[in-house]
Amino acid sequence: MGTCPVENMGDHVLLFSQTTAGEIVYISSSAEKILGIPREAVCGNSWIDLLQWTPFSARLLENIFGTIFCGMNERPVELSFFHSDGTERILELAVQPVFDEAGILIRIDGIAIDTTRRKHFRDLGKNSANPQQILFLSHFRNEIRTLLNCNAAVAEMVRAEPNLPEPVKESLDVITRSIDEMKNTMDDFYSLKEKSA
Image (cartoon, rainbow, N blue to C red; front, side):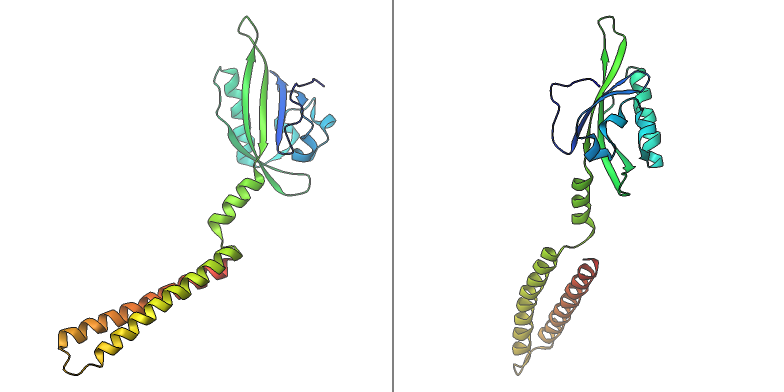
């Protein structure tokens, strides 16, 4: 197993080096934590055979290493695999070809970052409401309802005035209906967010 000047970059970062044939010859000490496979078992294998990739990620992985041999340098890509604990994990993988003085590809070095937690929290914020969001929405709804109720009360007080022209009464009816619709819309939105939490 080779050595690397930056051996430990944390529990979520993995450094590796592989031959042009695809055999991993070096992997950093975080391999077991990230991949669920002992470091010693990783070396000598290829990435494609090492893990249980999702079908899309397996095809993407083959393309990444294929384009390096054509002289193309890939941007980081997101790959998904199933960890030995059964959970789906996400790696952001970036690779760099290494050439000798004659310009011949001698190995591929790379870095893989476990982005599973980051993606989970990002998706959590997008797709569901957490308890803090529900609490905020509850307070926000109550504040808005208080203002709307004040407006409705003022409209009712004006409507109680004798000798009120008919166009003003019609405008007050529109205001009252709008206030009721606004309250119902807020209640519906709050109920949807509450159910998604």
